[in-house]
Amino acid sequence: MRILYLFFLLFSFGILFLRAQNNYIPSDSIATPFREGRWLTGLAGTISSNTNKTKSSDKKTITNEFGLNFSTGKFIKGRWLLGGRLNLNRASSSNNVDRTTESLYVGPFSSYYLSKNNRGSLFTTLSMGYVRYREETSFNDLASPITELAEGGGFGTLFGLGYSYVINDQIAFDIGFDLNIFLVDISQEQRPSGTTASENLTVSNTAFTFGFNVILDDFFF
Image 1 (cartoon, one colour):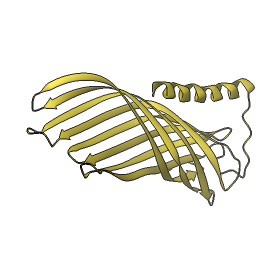
Image 2: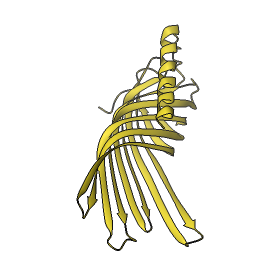
Image 3: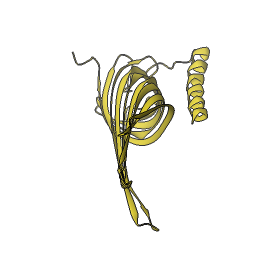
Image 4: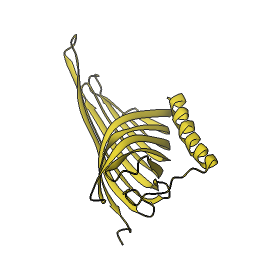
């Protein structure tokens, strides 16, 4: 996972470096909704549910996951969008082992919209920031049930690819996928024994996203 993380990081910065070296920033067309000076504010979500069943033991595990992403930014020359984003994610699974994980991510981001078409465009997104992570695991099939709590913070990177469809130059609907990679230092506590430990944890997640955006010539006020 660390190799994949470094690959995406170097690839994204390589694109930015080459564009700066070539001084290639195409001028905006008046037709594109992603033109210089406009503000984009959006809300996106992810949701999934799956069931795993083992035939030999007839045990079934149900996992539910959802996320909520809020972002706002301003378009600069060349259909570049710069801003900040906040992501909240929660996943839970139940069976003999119940597990709940939660993460909060906040950081700046940069998006590039490839097309000047007034109906929409493919776009890529890169963000790096701070992540807070928490996990609670309960082992229910033991004679004496045990609960493990893990919590900590660290560094996160988000890479996204999608398509934005625009209506009336102001409303945009996005679909795409995000790759999230978190590197966190966590403290673990086992209850009721009270045993503690520290771990370096790498968390990766790929999710399908759908979102709604408002594009305005000026900010809301």
